[in-house]
Length: 115
Image 1: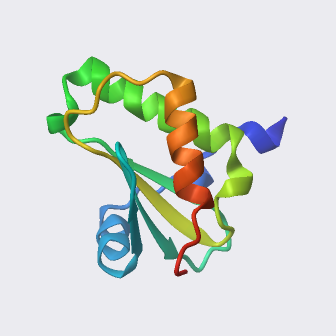
Image 2 (image 1 turned 120 degrees about the vertical axis):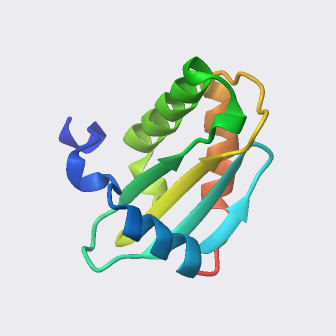
């Protein structure tokens, strides 16, 4: 059951690390999400989430973050080991159900990357 948790070690919390990922990472986009992947020296999979106010009010932003966290928690095998991944929600995205977000994020992470 521990494999399906979302521990603090698996979170990107440092603002300077976000800046490094934005500058050095590999960017990929889909209709509603953008991902940035960058290697880390810790050897663990880490997730960062960015949802701006342009995505909607606080209720919508928090729902998007919950969907992304749940996707990470249940599908850690899709995330590359030893890499930091930042998932950004695009602005004005419609309210998504988990299955729609799952489909789009799975396609985004299974697409071949230039890592």
